[in-house]
Amino acid sequence: MIKNIAITLSLLLVIVLVAGYLYVTKNGLVPRHAYETVAPELPEFSRPTILIFNKTNGFIHHETIPVSDGMLTGLAEQLGWDVYITNNAAVHNSTDLQKFKMVIWNNTSGDVLTEIQRRDFKSWLEGGGAWLGLHAAGGDTEYPWNWYVDVLLGAQFIGHTMEPQFQDADLYPTGEARELTGHLPAPWNVKQEEWYAFDQSPRGKGYEILLTIDEGSYITKGKTKYDFVDSMKGEHPLVWRHELGKGKVFYSAIGHRPATYNVPEYRELIRKAMSWAAE
Image (tube, rainbow, N blue to C red; front, top):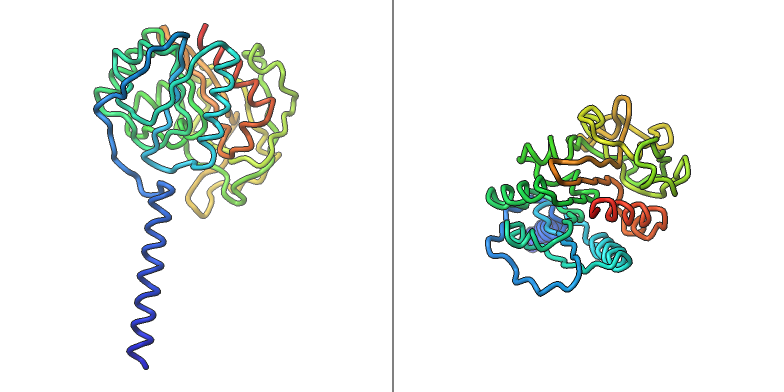
């Protein structure tokens, strides 16, 4: 009898461990180090084309990425552009990047580029390319690459809301870049999102802050039980832009949940950002 109970408990433990392993693997909770070195074969593009890059070597926004890809594809069509979507990082090479009007990193995560790919991407962007980053592209991507964090983004992600994780909050357009944010009300109340915090506002580096969040409009804990920091001292930016060499950079920390990409005000903000970056 005791032997049978021990066997049953052992089987249950194995099942729990396997289920846990499958869960963390599926959701990218264990960082991966998968790198592509052979670029995909690109089709012939008949119109200006944007690259949507979805690689995840960390947390995977399973439900969000397809929805945001759909939004970006629809906006590109409105602007008269073609779209190429891939999670193959080897497309970041000096030859293929020249074929794209801009590159959008859509909820990428982890360390996604090799050293050679980093070099080619940096050269392309500074030489006149355009980059848009959405949500995890600034919160969970390329931590080891100092240029990406300090120069491309201009701020280091330090955490997000966790208690609760998803909340309504009030966002405020600043007086800058009103051609991108003029359609937004003040405040703009965004429903049930995950709110990022950063180590600093990139305004100090001369970047234009487009949207800030009112920390008084949602619950902050300071440091959460997950060791995340959910608030900032002073200005708390969520969307900003700047020019980098001859290139253009736009980043939005908004966009963890699929429903956000169906909000008309947010879609219009991203459409305007894409148009600005492509000028």
